[in-house]
Amino acid sequence: MCIKIFIKNYNQDKIRKKEMRYTKFCSPIAFVFVFILLSPVALASSMDSEFPQIIVQKQSGFTTADLSARVTNGNHPFSEQFANISQNITRRNRNFEDGNTPIDQNPNPFYSTKGNYAVNLTVNDEKDTESKNLETSVNKVPNKDQVLPVANFVSNVSSGYTSRSVLSKDLLENATLRDWDFNNDETADSSDQRPVYLSPTPGNDIFNLTERNGIGTNSKRSAITVFNPADPVFHIANFHANVTSGKAPLSVQFTDLSQNVTGRSWNFGDGNSSIEQNPKHTYFATGNYTVNLTVNNDNGTNSKILEIIVHEVPNNDKILPVANIASNVTSGYAPLSVLFTDLSQNAIIWNWNFGDGATSTEQNPMHTYPAEGTYTVNLEVSNANGTASKTVTITVYNHINTESSGGGGITSGSSHSSVGTGLGGDSGTGDSPEPKSNVLTKEISQALIKSGKPAKFDFIKNTTSVIYVSFDSKKTTGKTTNIIEMLKEKSTLVSGLPSGEIYKYLNIWVGDKGFAIPNNIENPIVCFKVEKSWIQDKNINQSSIVLNRYSDNKWNQLPTSLSGKDDRYLYFITKTPGFSPFAITGMMTAEESMTGKQKSEQKGSTSTSGKGGNNMSVLGMICLIACLLAIFLYKINQKE
Image (cartoon, rainbow, N blue to C red; front, side, top):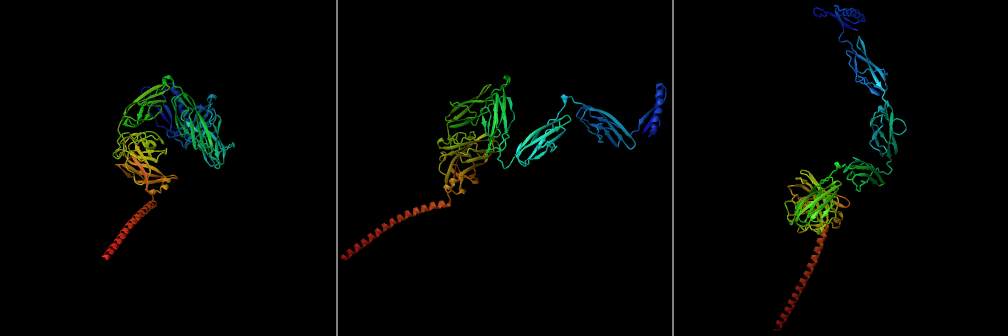
């Protein structure tokens, strides 16, 4: 140990301090010297004498042992964090009195049993060694506060075929150690938190996770079903609900988690059902509802049930309905079809009065006004807590105009707009100016129209020849409707016939009056289909099939191209400048046309031949008469 000595002299009359020269000692004699030197100083101090004060100070730059701890006591299992704040050292060593002697700068020991542990830090440099002690107390956790491990894990699959990788994840609840047993042989196969297991053979693989800490152990088992690829594919019904209880009205989103299924059917327990994969259903009345999902494939069916609990709403929290209506049009020419859309909130019952004596209880009805007039439409909605109502006015004019209009094709006073997912097979005309008697089938589709976005209307009922209609919109109109009418004969709105063999006559109406014009839409396309049997029966040249549009009082052929085919149909794409009456036509092949021409020529030849024969007969008679007359005159001359 090295020291230096400072001697300070204090005078009672005049306070003065004088620091004398110091001497450095680096040997054991320094301790003796300090003791001898300080003893009289201490004695003099007690006798209130004037002795110089000697201060022993450790030389700066020499070894100093020191440490700190985050905490010095806690319940086991207990993890401590030490910080080495020693100075001027080259080596360190700690003894935690639990058998561990790390040399880390800032070690983090773990005490698994209770007790008092004396921590010793020893530091040194080339000439000196120093130590510092610190005590850490580890208490026993009272039984009621002891934290046992909870074994829990999840796997990415619960079933699959052989050689399928199964990823499992330990959810880590109060555990310090884990063992995975994948084949139920009581032998640890992995200690990873996220092990991957490859299923080797068909059957049920039992996964067992054992968790440990200083208090005890806990285990969890789960089975993974492994199928043989040669065996039939079994279906497994499974689904999830985002909520299983709540106040009425309670909306529940169901998610189908079933495996190996080709079809499904939902029964919501309140008389409603669905075949959607992930339906959303609202329960308006209180009660317990058993939801049943039945799935199937070629090997049979399987079901799963779940209970949904809907609580009664307290009187002060009861939700009243709010009535609101929207309609696709508010005015137009008779006959005017109007689609009413319910925008009410918290309603479970709807009662419509259309103002002309007709009523409906549908949520979103369509109604046709055949006569001119102003009609007040009233919607009354209700739920278990009360009722509310809303009215709108519909004005119907008595006029129809069938002249062409600015690229939008033939228009009518009625608004060519409706709503629905399709009314295929309905022979009614909706809001079309086409007479009802000439409409064979009709299909309706609706799309949301936004400016700058493409719009597409799909016709999924397959009741007409049109597959879809699309265009790029320059105007935002919201929900817009496209009506396709398949006609029995050519439209009553046109005159004349298009050239070629007629396959089908049809009308296409898009949006309100004046909507389908170049100022509002661009790149209009119609996709349609033609039966192969018609092409074969009529001997039609496939490349001659076109869509004809009636506009400007004449039929115009549109550029048409083949887009695909299947066993029954050929599919075509056509670009059209607008929407109006159309006709699908085709031309017979050259051979068929030549055969018809030859027959006509043969018929004409026969007719000409007959006529020529008649002419020859008359000429012969004239010649015969002339000869007889000449002979007669000759004989007269001879007699003279």
